[in-house]
View 1 (cartoon, rainbow, N blue to C red):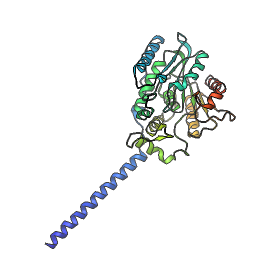
View 2 (view 1 turned 135 degrees about the vertical axis):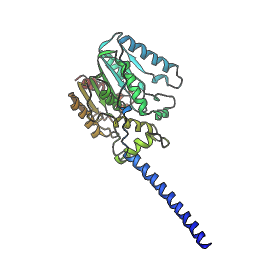
View 3 (view 1 turned 120 degrees about the vertical axis):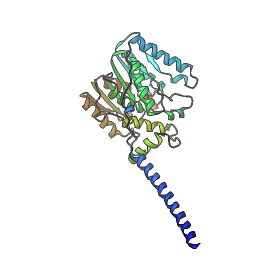
View 4 (view 1 turned 180 degrees about the vertical axis):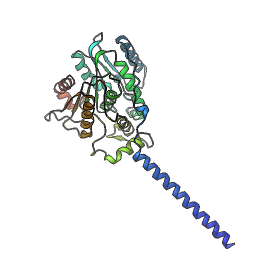
Length: 326
């Protein structure tokens, strides 16, 4: 009987050991996935763009604005913006807002380009501009890809020469569109593009964890400065992970990069490397400038509600138009 009891006891210890080993293996596997998975997918590396003529573009954009008007969850000042001269113009531009932002912050820049002769479209990113601003954390990389393809198709009929301007996360999207837009955009202007946070805000070793854990909504959302969703930020980084390996953008003629002199939120070295690399790979001209030091511009470069932008709007917006048109 003693031998039987000892055998049972040993079996119990063996089971416990096996369970512990399985748990450790699962933890190791999860850690390896969280830190090593590249977040690349063929579905995030292609755009479905349906090109339109001028009348089709205007009609379809107006329908989207009407749908947003009927949606009580969308704030009235956050609907897409369309500014046209009543016909297809020689030049048209699409302006993409950043993470947790919405079209209203772009309205005065849109008017600046409109006054310069452009037709202008400012779309609203999915889950952004809602009465509950924290809902922007629901956005997924797959939704961003669909949004970019749809938006490119909508702006396609507004002008002969098309360009895209992106601020912060909008710069992340503009970079992707240039590479997968099948030559639709000849000009790109990136304003403090968010590819990854500055290392002072998030150490580089955390980027894979951000992408794979928060990007896949495996942890409850958190908000940087109470406003920027970790989940949303992660999905924009996933978009960056799916850029072309060679960064080539077909049809690109000029790429401009402007970064705020006091911007401490984005990885500025990465922004320069990606932008310059894309221009070089595409045989495009490249212009890089920082905002004048005396202005003291940080990451916010467009919204007229920002006190620096409000004070120096003429200098800043004039700079953007000048660099865009080089």
